Amino acid sequence: MRNRIEDRIDNRVLKETWQSMRSTFTQAPEKFKQLAESLPEIFADSETDIDLREKRKVYLVIAKFLRDNFKTPLPVSLGATHILCDEGDPRLLLDGVLDDETKQLVTSAKKIILTVKVLYSPLSNRSYNRQIEIVYLKNDKPTAVKVEEEVPWDYLTTDVRENHLRSGANILSFKLYQLEA
Image (cartoon, rainbow, N blue to C red; front, side):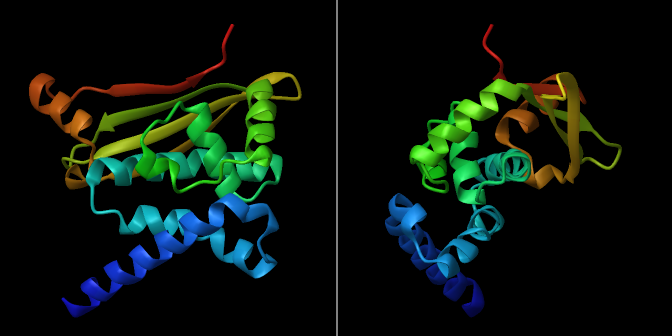
């Protein structure tokens, strides 16, 4: 029990430090930038609110796609993910960097990403399969990247659990981003 309390204090201090440093991320020392690469995962894994935890996990997958395809730091990619997905929750927005590099990344990403959606499919063991699909242009051809993960019932968002209880074991889909026509 004591470790949990200490972890919460450490996590709170880490979040507070990150919040003060994120506005000057591009000028931060290289060692801090390296540490900052691991912060989004730490924040997602240590989140106690189930809905926020799941959103953080989904946004992290999308941010890693941006990082890998545009060679940008993960915190910048996460900030761009929040913008692309029109996220407005300030608790989540604090995880990423929102600066000029982020805005440039959003502009570049909008040129190639066609759609981002999340699909939850029930499994036989009372958990769900979460599939994040990013459809983007690669060599001028639509290409899909799919990342799947099993999510236990207790870690599903309220929306997914309520839908299951009301409608039975249905597939639920959320479109997070759609290229504007």
